[in-house]
Image (cartoon, rainbow, N blue to C red; front, side):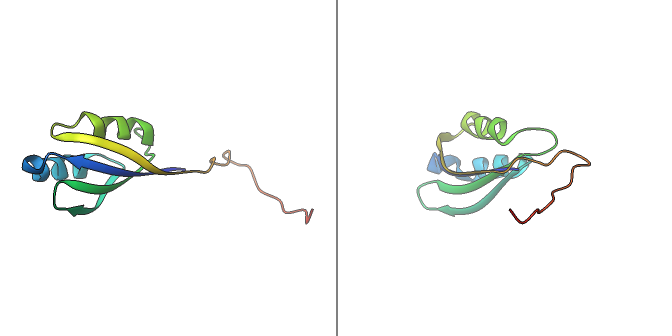
Length: 89
């Protein structure tokens, strides 16, 4: 599991366009927008792309001035069929 918190700054005149583009990206979720074009976005891995690929896609969206990684959480996925055993140690 890979979760990234992004502070994105869009050109104020293109804010609506950028919001729509973010909503169209699988694994990206727009949480909040403030005046001036600043946005809070979370990005997660999907079956189609990694969170890193989606963050790079955010950088390339028309109207995006910057996209800064401000939070990152990673947990390895357990192998299929593996079990976790608590031995009390």
